[in-house]
Amino acid sequence: GKRLKSVSISRPIVYGNVAKPFGEKRPPEANAEHTHTWTVFVKDPQGKDLSYFIKKVVFKLHDTYPNSTRTIESPPFQVTETGWGEFEIGIKIYFVPESNEKNVSLYHNLKLHPYGFPPGHVLTDKDREVQSILYDEIVFNEPTERMFEILTKT
Ligand code: SLL
Image (cartoon, rainbow, N blue to C red; front, side, top):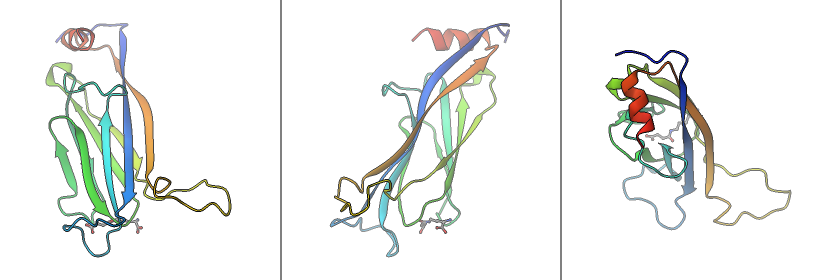
């Protein structure tokens, strides 16, 4: 479709992960070496549904995971897993076909472990519930007319 020259429109997202140790209740499906449950996600800063312009999100986990490429075709765009280690997660965001946009690649360092407490501080269970979340904006330069409509109608 026709593109709107000199138009640039952006949409905010947040992406990252939350994690916590199993504690008392170990998920029965978790391997013996696993220590944490975590969720990696892409979402709207205000929790709105992003599926009006995002078609799917592909999360590439560490090769130690079965089916390490996880394709999420509808919201919530997230993967919850158990594990023992931190690693870099590839996040590919695909847009609705009307946009004629290439996918956007993001990378996230999965965080499982708390840090930054003063020396001598004794970690509470709450301190062990960590998160690493970034705010970003997806910029569409010279969007198609259809994409501009889609982005501005909500
Ligand atoms: C490390 N670079 O060596 C990292 C790799 C891999 C994490 C961490 C378990 C996967 C599974 C898991 O947590 N892998 O058992 O399916 O520390």
